[in-house]
Picture (cartoon, rainbow, N blue to C red):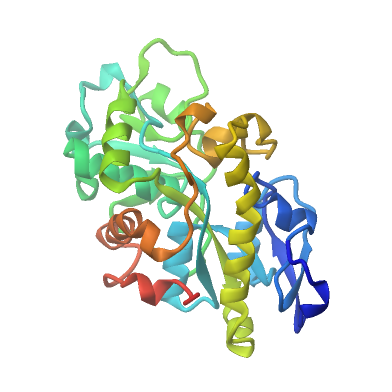
Length: 323
């Protein structure tokens, strides 16, 4: 919190879509404020509809946003730029279900098979395909994807190995044998349906050991016209997010149960990637900035290129606003 409110030089008012997480609560509650902007938070029961509104209509000045779509939008010049602020983290590849009757027993054996998923370009799918490729011999280009919904960005073009079945139910596709596996939640009780990665924790521990942190999931994007008209805005907003997170880090250091404090609609596994405070990485489970996240972001940008979301490899400095 700023001690001297009179030092604020507000130049703009921003319409904002952001979830109230433990590390963003001071911003949403107004106890931490940027110096150059007033933040008006939209009343949301879920952040996910805001993604589409931002992607297709720039309906917010600043919005929480899936990182894969943020990278793709930046490559396409949609009109907004992500800050190096990462408000959710989690692993996604364990949401890979298969039918034991399909004859496969490992991700590498999905070559030539059909795999159902809700969206090809969303962050969970990009992370999942990338980790499965790096660690399990999965060849995403050899799979036919059955995509049941559209993408957030209208400009997104799916690879040739994607077929659209709008509105299809992933669980029904799997049980009926129409697909060999699904990348997403299975909601049925068929005894033939199992996770294809039975012990994901081992891979997660290896990932954390190599990169230092759980994969980033949601970032925060700001409209380009505002960043151009107010050159200090990106740095000011980044500073506000850092200050808003500080009370959470202090409570973590003092032994508070942060997971119990997480009352967001999505819950701690989505937000932090863990179910217990004891599993959080100390001293900061949610680091911001490019330097702290270099080993997490570089492979993800590579995944975006390898999976045909972007036409060329991008440097991190091309993607994120300088702060």
